[in-house]
Image 1 (spheres, rainbow, N blue to C red):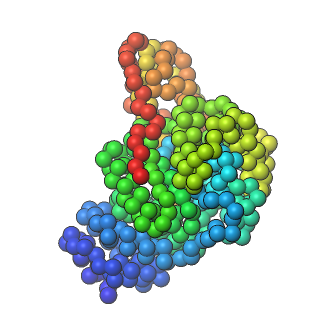
Image 2: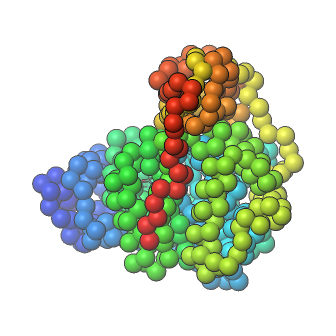
Image 3: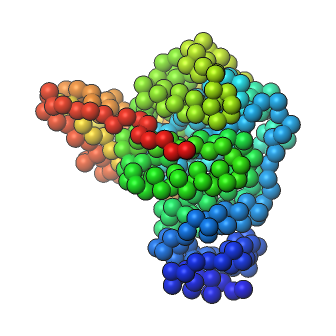
Length: 425
Ligand code: URA
């Protein structure tokens, strides 16, 4: 077996054999296949695709590159959620404690932001003292005592994906459905959850820009999960506009705590509850009432225990950026569009995200939205507040925003896209 013949097979639109797939993933993980060879193969896959048999084998080979976790010792059923990534997507923060408060165990292995989408771990790290890196034993301990844990995936879980994802990120090969599906599902299957709900984002701020691509990604992942014995469901959810009223690390933690306290923006509450119902249903806890657990404070109790168990202070004051800049509405009317991608890029440029894996993020940086599509706005009112510790970044961030919203004349009819667009099981 050699890398060049594997690359040539896919370059010439052929089907990779199981032996070729097993070999190339293993040899790449061991460093025998070079980054430039894997880049060429990833690009060939992006351009020519893989069929379902190839994707299933590719996923299995990535799982086999590392360890598999096991939650059999827990008394509660496990259920997990994975989002394909969006702008202002803080849903994991209220969702994990909410589902735990309803009786499930939620092992939420999360990632960091890269590019214009934020990462759950970066958000939680804005809470003073909170620790993302736990050993497997610590992770099980937090899960057992609080019902939920949000932490970084250990190095032993699907190491082939870790290496390949970093390579894809710098070679323009992230947006390939077979590679996204196998990347996400290898980690989730290796993690050992019994049930999984996929939040597949669709719209300008998501990897999948069209509903057709989102459907294809969702059904590929649902098939991979189901075939591996994980009860898997996908919701296709809107990412044309940011979720909630904040994008940025500490800003999103604050909004999540508002939701746990019984307030917060309607789209964040609606999506949190929709995903909670799916997660509970998939775990065999369909009779639980997440709306009640949000209203009666039991989800907030789990949040406080979960944050404390990982060294965080749930009562600590969250960091606030040193400088603010307000963008005002240029005219009066109905806000009909507020573009998720542009807001994500601007928040990233303000310091909320990173350009390279090793870059630090600013906890307080980001954007607050003062209106959402469908709201009436008045000329001169604040539309967005930009936050950063480094005011020299304002100009660069503002350059992402001039065509990021539309305001139609007052009285214009407007129907908002529902947050949950489709369900695939
Ligand atoms: N998230 C992942 O974990 N992998 C991808 O390829 C894309 C999003």
